[in-house]
Figure 1: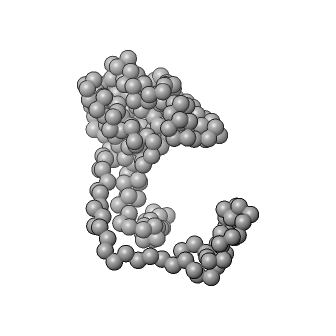
Figure 2: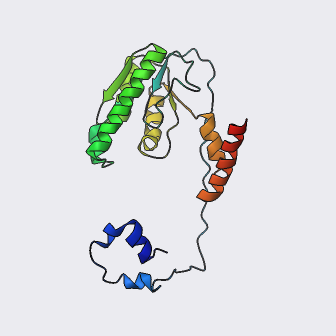
Figure 3: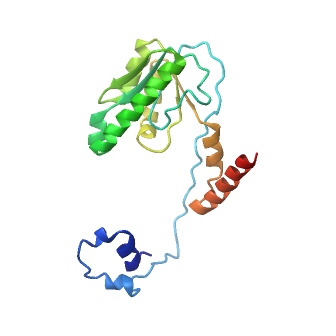
Length: 214
């Protein structure tokens, strides 16, 4: 439970200059409520993604997003894409995700940097698509470049991940396959997640120490 001393030390601005009622926290007047019966929580398995790509005769495009901006390193590095694209949507960032102006500026900067590095590594056009509808923008890009497959690193939890289901369906309707890949290092880290931060960190720390020793 939160204590007044913690608030005063780490987040005094939350008190807003008023301490009325805060004495209850200091004196232990607030106690935890224990529920004897709880509904069973059904665990959900993480979706599994491949950590490598097999050769294909399809014309490939790489979708670059801000969850992973280093396609030149890892399982995508040896691809020969026809085109690379990322989507920048300021209306979505501001209206739906309510990001600050500074956050939006930083996103634009890192996307630009990622595109430039990807273009230099793969030797193909790298485009920034500006659209109020990122899914439709990516679909239009894929059709314009006559792609048979769009390849990307699997997004983590967040805005990019939220659009996956719709993007997959739209590309499938167009006869274009969406292939998502996960870095082996990420897959290993996810395998350590069983419940709670500290058990995860203990396993992760041991793994990192073993890598360092080897």
